Amino acid sequence: MENLFDDTYFMKKALQEAEMAFEKGEVPVGAVIVVENRIIARAHNLTETLNDVTAHAEMQAITAAANFLGGKYLHNCTLYVTLEPCQMCAGALYWSQISKIVYGARDEERGCLNLKTKLHPKTTMMGGVLADETSGLIKRFFIQKRNLN
Image 1 (cartoon, rainbow, N blue to C red):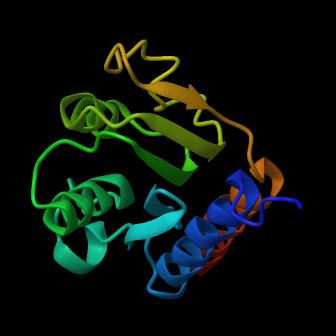
Image 2: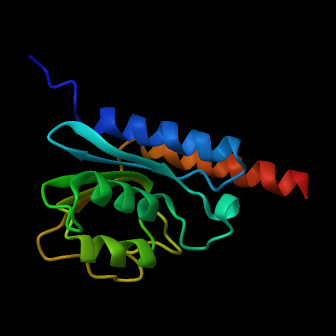
């Protein structure tokens, strides 16, 4: 029997979070953190809502997951995020010692890969899961934003 809880399944959950951010006028990035096929944290960008440049989806998810687990380390956890993490978020993910990061769309300009941000040695990362859908939402957001100005 096929595993219903695969990377695509969880990325769709992160995409739902990104859509909530879009509706709030936030850059549409969403994230979920999973342990043993169970979502323990859901988050989306809140930088405008909270007037806080650090309120990225990943940062919100890290805090929620740490609170859920009762500790600061996210061992055996996977982060699903609709956009490749930025340098700030990758740094926080390093310190959380998260086991795996799965992202949707690349961020060629501000993403951690081009900026060569180090991840924890035990963290693995893969990208491209639902990349068309995740990048499409971000493109639509910025087109809409440009047309309003």
